[in-house]
Image (cartoon, rainbow, N blue to C red; front, side, top):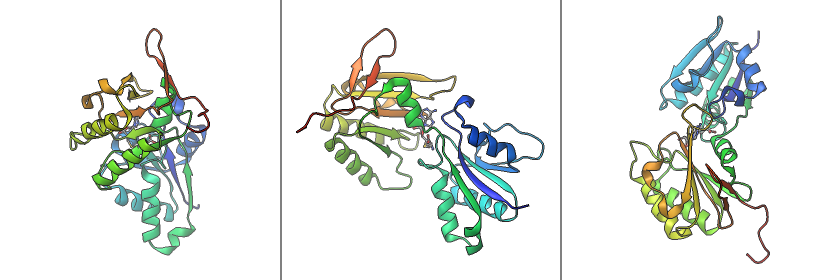
Length: 252
Ligand code: SAH
């Protein structure tokens, strides 16, 4: 029996948003590896071993998965959303590159999932309908000065922006600084969306002009999306629709 390794995205939370391809890999797996809350989303069954670990041990987790696949097991490494977006796929390839050369002959596949940015934008309308960028606001793996530089240049380029990991208890002040920077670059009328726990029972959406946004509106389960200068708000009863038109006038 030959082993394989699938690096799979479980989507933003709702089981209906797990792709059939990921469901099929999980059904064939002997081992599932991942961060505790993501592994908890996989139904236990006979013949399946769940390896849940803490968030900070990504490289150990990746090496464990590669070792088990090399031993002939069918291993699925799970991430939330998409595994290639600020998640485990890069960690596995980092471990592969540094690891023993026979690992390179393994059958390794990345199975995409619906990333939080797309789930959040779908709930709000189409704020990412024109050019946009995605920025991880966590400074665990990069210097804070680089985050500020990228945000400033993205504002100058007039991208809509999707922010992952906006705020944690370990970095409560960083997001307030980002909001102040965005206000300076984009002005108070720019629409901003806070989409929390999208597609879970705790889902909550709220949008407003940037001038009314407060850092406390975000936590680690929130996706923040800032519109570009062309993003529009359609007011109606309940959550307004945010959308960015597909066109920009010549000379803009
Ligand atoms: N690989 C994941 C992202 C991991 S980074 C993906 O593709 O979605 C973790 C961050 O994603 C969180 O801090 C939050 O900003 C965002 N996130 C993940 N799931 C979310 C959800 N259901 N609703 C809103 N934001 C979510």
